[in-house]
Image 1 (tube, rainbow over the protein chains, first blue to last red):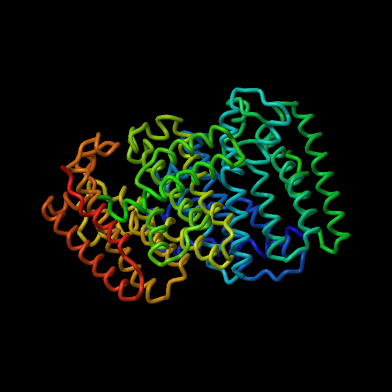
Image 2: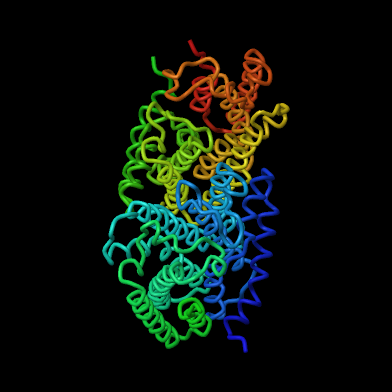
Length: 298
Length: 298
């Protein structure tokens, strides 16, 4: 039997994907650029970040209309830019992503840089085109820029590169991950809350959930790199170890990493319990915890 | 004797530069990233785009306060990102920019990509942090994203790469330049107009001015590449020809390019005459035409 989250995903994933494809297809501009952006955006992926936005709107009984899809889509556009740049030869130098050739392997390095630049920039355009109130647009664009920029995701990317072949402490590793993946997950929850007009207290607790969920997500991703196969993941695995990347399993062994994961999940669940007392539904968010953080690799 | 534009630049350039440096210095985040962003932003340059915003505010008698500087600064942050990515080995592969080593020559390719990403993203953050009305913030951020994104500057970049070693027609070359440099110059004028609460008719004529000015600017830049020295320009010259880039002098010879330049300047001046009849001052904008478009290289 399908879980509530699986039913929710089935209901919304294809609408979101259609929205993304039609948004990019309808842009004017250079053809190769459009092809390159579409290539990476259409490659699939779990769409966790936009799904978090949609789920929070649903749990808060906010109607999931075209504007909500647009905000969710803008986040996936931005996330995809980060993957394209991350895969570049000067960065992680990856050949496979989401089960297909990486953008620069398919279109060449120059187009891949520009496809990333285009996706990042149009993420803001995508929010600007909605019919949301100007105050909501301004709030979301500002928050997205902060989360993705030099105080957020990009800072984490640089810290990751600078930390290679060095042994970071647990605190440094947490700080790195908070920027690199935590900031955008935090933004997902915030954006869902803004769209749903949640109270300040609800937003504050949702932020707590986002921090724990983001941590669990990152630890889980680190674990997957150790225990899974390339076929399961659709991208190269066992890379962290061979490149002396700083990860939870590297720092504290696989068992230690699983223990940290469990602790983060418990904290996230505690936040959901509080949110439920504040009047939100939490079945879907709880499902995210189950699905993405507790799933064991066979 | 100094022209009104030179006095204006003297008055505002150092305030703008201080704003840029203090904005970047006050960001939290990874140290190397900040250094790399500051390195390229602090390298100087003519600051034409932000100066256009400031000049339009001045001509419209809009007070040049901190918010105006912020919007002007955000545009320079974004412009600097485009220079950093443009200089990358996979793009123009330049070693010198604004008289110093290019970002990737100084910090390595990975940091240069990320410094560009950081500057692009924080340009939106910079507008979001102002005390302007939400409606103005949303308008400016949306317009900036459109001008800089896959329907604007990035599209022009890709068209430029795709057009190498091909003979473009004049119409194709104009379309390329309209995206690559015209869109951001158009945004500069638009942003100045929005900040000054110009009427729709004034904005429309300012847009005409921007189109002609942007064209003149680009033709002039093409001519400079042919007739100037590396020392004068602070970057490599004579590159367009050796790399079979599509430029005005390549397409119609140097004399033909000068004729196109003169035509564009005349058109821009005609727009200024109309704007003056609509109640705007135009001495500074006229000075831009003199300074950047009419100046002859010795």
